[in-house]
Length: 344
Image: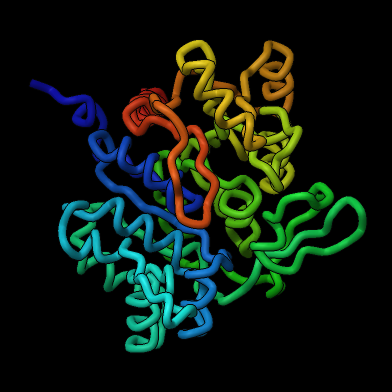
């Protein structure tokens, strides 16, 4: 019997973003694509990640760690679970809540002298079938100019609540280069996926690295943006779906982004679940005909489906705010169809 993935010769997919969103994309795409690459954000300054960065003077390991654990050959193996284990140490506050995988990546960075080599070693240790790479090996920080003229000088400040809207993102290291193997993977890809994830701090932050936008402009791959399912407090309060797409287009330039995957699932999720998220400022993004026309006017084709994962309620996450996640299976099928269409 011919499987869907056999209909085209080993298509290659690159997913760009943070740990959670990229993992959902690659888990869904795994049955259909022969080559999978994750290019992961490295500008987080959260508590556990920030401490590990200081230990090894390295880029942020947290999103990389999450992706490695999620894409391990056996996610239930001892090592995969150990990567995500958080140390309980009230007597040593600096270690209390530390993810062991962050310390492992810090130790590997010190041993190899290079963060990318450390991540590659972790790939091998966990037996990944996808290749997980940092978007850059530069130890830099995400900054933002706000609409009131003030400046947020690290990722934690950029995503802080109760501040002025974000006007412009930039990196503390001017012209910080993207990791060259990421650029090579984009050049060789059939499909490149941007998002979903924390919009400014995981998605747009990756597009700031030098040569990344140019690589997306020149690749022959179909470039796809997966729109978030909800707004995000501190980042996209009051944003429409078209606002999300517009920001991506502004960073990449015209005629670069081909498709936007837009979720429409408000009629399949319970009103109770939607209200739970809304109470914390996460409002469902439901496409209207006007918004879809606005997206099309940006030169981007909207693909509207129910992409949301069925949820019985909010999850408790470490130092993060939960949201309505995308269903990997639904994403994978959509991306396979996109790869098929470009092969015809």
